[in-house]
Image (cartoon, rainbow, N blue to C red; front, top):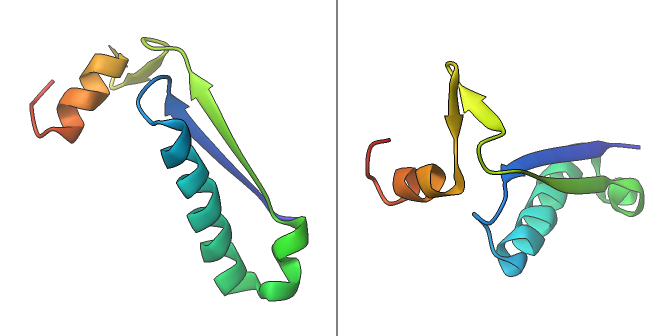
Length: 74
């Protein structure tokens, strides 16, 4: 049973976007493993608290991620 785990910083994605993540990642996995595996392919989206995620020793906040998505340096 495949398990797709996605971790994102809280309040970056809307509920609709998280549903889209689940659908599209499941579709991608099923494209590889075959349609018969869809009913047993799990996808979990977990939100990490703002500031509890870091890159290169620097914590990232929700505001930082939104700035990056907008093309603004952090």
